[in-house]
Image (cartoon, rainbow, N blue to C red; front, side, top):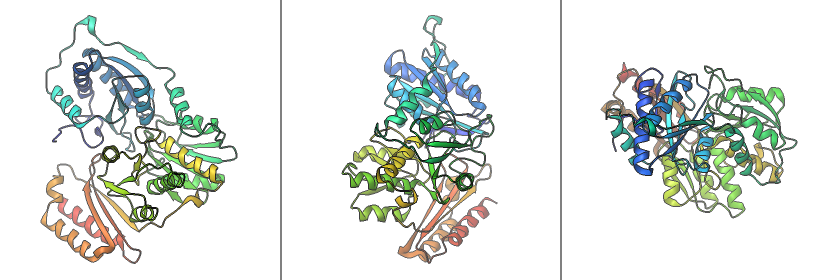
Length: 448
């Protein structure tokens, strides 16, 4: 299905550049309201956001558009993306809107939608919204305008939900944790969750000013957390991204525990207790080592395209409950409907407490060396033509021939950023960094 505005994770881009503008958000809110009202009568929508300064502008624009379409709005304020999914479901709203560009810098922003069930909107609904955007905006009569209210206890509701995803008697007493909130949406949520469960918590990236979200902190910059864990003598560190749907862990020695590691830890524990109930979904980026380790447990493993919506699609198709991405976007479907950084971290901490072991002791497999290079696209570059060029295909074919059956190449355009991602993975004796660099150099040359 060809879509003009929606990508793999909603609509995202640079603030002030179409469509990430106030006038477009007004029209987007109106278009969504029209679609919802046609489906449900008078609809109710929740709006939450991360800590970017542009969130104020887009929140107001979306609220105005929804009201003009005759939709009631409840404002959540700063709230992690999975918290918005949870509240959309439990408050019986018809949809939830997230204003966030996730792990991107503050100059970017975006919009994601959740259905009444707390899952991503189906493609066909997004297509209907795009159809409405192209129509002239018409305001409903004044007596049918939507009303706006603010939900003052949104943070408390989500805090209690997060704690409910682990056993009632679980205590984190005695654990010293560094939390890196990326100056993002978890800054006022995560500290309360882990402290109320008994952990001794110190903070990093928990002082947002609207401009510093993801700035040298968070799950995409784990070096800050590694240094803090070692300096403060913590048992582990937990880093979220700007909207709280990703998580990366760091053990007491400063070693990074990524999404593949977390998926394995949760899968093995649930398998050992007879509660896994099916297999695991990863992505094309998931490490060879994860697939091999799950195979050794006789746990089915399937790869989806990169993007949490594709992981969710495969989980639903298989009636499985656990999946995610190496970036730290983990879906624990037995307790949550979408990727949730806080909930995923709690699952691992519960395993540590129940097994009385350190985070490092839960590592269960050796990873194949993997090199990832992100090549930023120059303005006006035709991504499709670039990826299909004969020269680039020849280079990829040469690298694949060199890898043989001991490695693989993944070359793709990012669905959320103007990047071409080059990934090469192979056995330890192969120089995957050099091979990835060879392909990335060709991409850069073709854009010159």
